[in-house]
Amino acid sequence: MPNLAGKKVAVVGAGICGSLTAWAMVLAGCEVHIYEPDKDKKSCSFTAAGMLAPMAELESSDDNIYRLGLKSVALWPQIIQTLALPVYHRDNGTLVVSHRQDEGVFNQFVNVLKNKLGDDFSTSCELLTQQTLEPELKNLGTALYLKKEAQVDSHQTLQALHERLQLKAHWHWESAHNISAYKVNREDFEWVFDCRGLSAQKDIPGLHGVRGEVIMVEAPQVNITRMVRVMHPRYKIYIVPREHNRYMIGATEIQSDDTGPISVRSTLELLSAAFSVHSGFAEARILALDTNVRPATMDHQPVIDHAPGLTRINGLYRHGYLLAPALVEKALKDLGIELNSFLKRGEHANCI
Ligand SMILES: Cc1cc2nc3c(=O)[nH]c(=O)nc-3n(C[C@H](O)[C@H](O)[C@H](O)COP(=O)(O)OP(=O)(O)OC[C@H]3O[C@@H](n4cnc5c(N)ncnc54)[C@H](O)[C@@H]3O)c2cc1C
Image 1: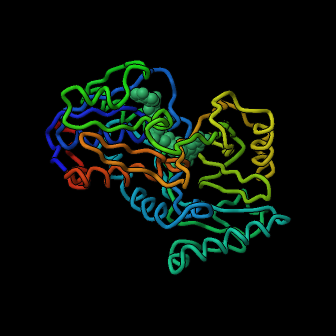
Image 2: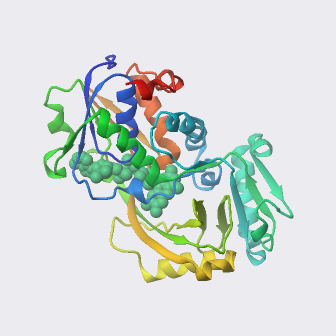
């Protein structure tokens, strides 16, 4: 593998994966060209709730995602330090709750985590029979506190990365039709990073879409400070607090690549579940309903695929923010670039 430090590279796609890759390459001193088809189209990365939840996700993921996730949780604060615009980041954990009648589902979740986490369970999780962490949710039954989980505001993260990249990289607003990674590869770039998400379907066997829907509300009568996951036999929802009493309520998971507007069923389910957790959501104002399609591989594992002159990073599925820092770090390490050494010099961003 060549050492790319200081060379001219292209990044195709400016979702969270492409934007982080591009920023890392800028920090490494490369001349970075970003190809993105549409200024106004919101990528899947804009829809994400921004949870960094390696433990909660273990219910349906595995040790690989867990380890990469822990690494990303540690990398995010360092990445944010290199950005100029503020990024909302909280690391006060997740509270997993259920209604008393659904305790069976809750207990099953706890057992899965105990089994998958082994010794880590006692250091990173705490069963609370009478939880006081979120006083407004004290009527719910036993809670599980996942101490090491964090979140970033996905909109602010992308905005902050794009603001840096507007200054430090060359943008090419070109139609997706004209810029497959291979076409760009014929130019004089030393290397091309293909981070097109679901649009790379033709080049990554089995890559498919998994639809997700979220609702952003403003709820002045709700004061929850941590991410909350509600265990329920039919639909599992999360409530992610953002600044100014805003809450992201999500998310559906539907095997479909339909990016059309949110359905009535999903809207009812998400909002009723939130209301059942806290009656203050009744008077909340709906600020946005959003839908997007997660890029998923058949085994739900992320892909780093190196070919001559080309690296593909894809298949981030439910875990774009949870995995992107660790995946980008891993991909660049293969190419001779130590992301950590650039991030450690937190002042670097200000002087380039
Ligand atoms: C409802 C929902 C909630 C989620 N919540 C979370 C969460 O809490 N935590 C978490 O970690 N993850 C979450 N995710 C998952 C996360 O959003 C995705 O894993 C992530 O966005 C994938 O990032 P990406 O950069 O690979 O792809 P994308 O975000 O899809 O970005 C791909 C980019 O490539 C561009 N592009 C497409 N075709 C071309 C082309 N030919 N040339 C150039 N550019 C092109 C696109 O315009 C886009 O900007 C959620 C997803 C959904 C739908």
